[in-house]
Image 1 (tube, rainbow, N blue to C red):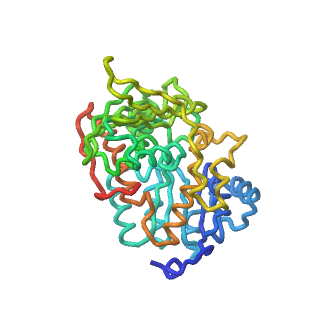
Image 2: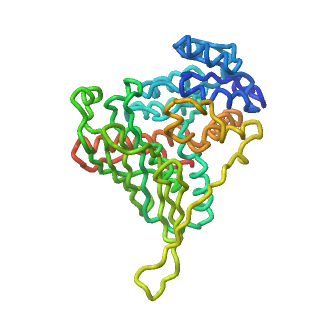
Image 3: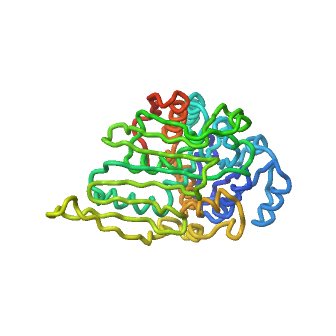
Length: 388
């Protein structure tokens, strides 16, 4: 580990933010974080670099990742770059002696995931996959109830990420939808503290030949059933990207023998909580149904960044990563805080390379199953102790 990282003190961290379209959302959060001394901006588009730099008063700007990695005083890099680059760029960052945060997915192959885990271990750098779904106010609410035992024994869970991605950057066209699974699956794996052991998955619908040729994937929708490891439970997950008339949702549901929780069907609705009643003379037990006002959890954050659970760079704007995701449930400052503290405290992040690899591998294995007409595919585990 480099000496400038080992000697970090409060307020000493220099973070480079690479990729400034959706990535601009994180710039003011890092600026306001009490452990961050300086934010450096990087984008290959000079106009975007100028716009974001001027807006936030950030004068230190770079045009390439190579420039960032060559700067000895930059401690950490947050990659918000095309998903085809995540694995290779994360490895580059850690090999250069810098800590790495990256948006999902962690990588696009099992081999790259394996390399990612090994590089994190070998270099001692801190890595975090910035999975929004496990820091939404809804997830934090459910997790607290689950940890208090209020759900009872879980019996089933379901996740969905349904999205029309027409008009997104070209690298998304024809992408295997289930390979971008973690928004829908990670909440269940984080809640249960385990991984997915095996999967059956089927593709649904048909892409045009032109779209299918990009990744060799014919499916606009994929649906998987996962068997969890060390838990008597199955999880159903559906992911769509094209040719599906359905408004955006990024959701999870969990059902126990005492309580059940369902993410709302539409973004402007409240989530549902189900409570199992006592057995009566009627067939079946009564189920109490209520809509929830889920509390914001800004209280878990330093005062300087609490406002960002409700405020966004894109309020009134049109960046689809934020607008379609309903603001990602106030998760962004929680992600930044966890990454920064992992670096400052020199500890594994909550979504370190092994955890990120476990979550990402489930989707890669599911797509492999879909391409084999639903054949069972075993999912490799990159550790045996996931951290939620």
